[in-house]
Image (cartoon, rainbow, N blue to C red; front, side, top):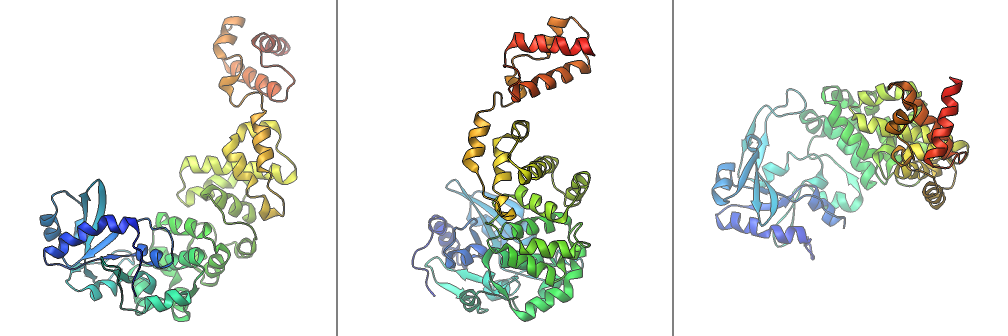
Amino acid sequence: MQVKKMPQEYIKARPIINKLEQAGFEAYFVGGSVRDILLHQKIHDVDIATSAFPAEVKAIFPKTIDIGIEHGTVLVLSEGEQYEITTFRTESTYQDFRRPDDVQFVRSLEEDLKRRDFTINALALNKKGTVIDLFNGLTDLQNKILRAVGDPHERFHEDALRMMRGLRFVSQLGFELEPTTFEAIKENHNLLEKISVERITIEFVKLLLGEFRNLGLEMLLASQCYQYCPGLAGYLKELEKFAELKGPRIKEETQAWVLLLDTLQISPKQVRSFLKAWKCSNERIRTVQAVLSGLQERKEGFFQPKTLYDLGLKQALLVEELLPYYQKTSQLERVEKKYEALPIKNLSQLAINGNDLLQFFQQKPGSWIKSSLEACEKKVLERQLPNQKQDLLSYTQTLLSKS
């Protein structure tokens, strides 16, 4: 097969391949980008595989960085771009189901491609656009089949994360798992216990953001892989409901977590520990908690001014985009207008601050400052007080006289 129109990213990388070939080596574009070109999708990375060993690659190019040289990968810097050049290699046994015990560099493209995970990812492309297909990946691509290269049991014992990657590809591409490959995932799902949570989380989030999320989730449950995802083992019925949810493609990771947490009915007090188990950052956790809280209010009615204020426009819109999953219509323009109409957008816009209170009341600093500002903030947002310094000081004076 011939690719008639090479993407600009590959055209820019041709001089790299030219130099490798001029030095007497083979070199090809490989990996997911080749698959994506054939699927007419945007490519993200340009990976090059070569018969040149790492030392030979470094001898050809003046500017290189050793980013994974023990596994055959050298980063080449050229014309303001960076290219990962990896030597053809074979791998030995995998004692920990994650990393090979030994990597051997070889001169054979076939030996290199046969260690790849799925046939649609075992394609290579030369600089002229000719596809090298040694494992019928083109046929599987045409038939929308996800099939392991060679023996699927061997592939998943080499790197158990490949099972989650396979489920993620189902979600992203809408492909069907070839029966033998699916059965191997089902039989070996317990190997995910050996995989770090961080790696599982990356694949799980990508699955949730896929265009065919429902299908990916169905396969996650049918394969039993969900049992080795943090905190999901006891939620089969809820996850089945989650897999059946109808709505647009989820755009953002926070929305994916919010929708999952809401469907699982995780209590607000449990949200932090649940997401910590997935190794989510503190910032992500705070955002998810805020959006989840906003969603609960929005399902019952429209946002209160204080809720809009606390969320901010970006997070409020994240909430709004989830409403179709609850058979409600998103009102994005209304949210934007209501937010823009708020008297203040943050506490710094309040006409008074802590220094103003200290100077006016001549009192020692204390918790009264925070509580006074919060009270004024609430009154302004509810339009019960104008955002004027004197009005706010008078209101605060009244509050303090009652305390």
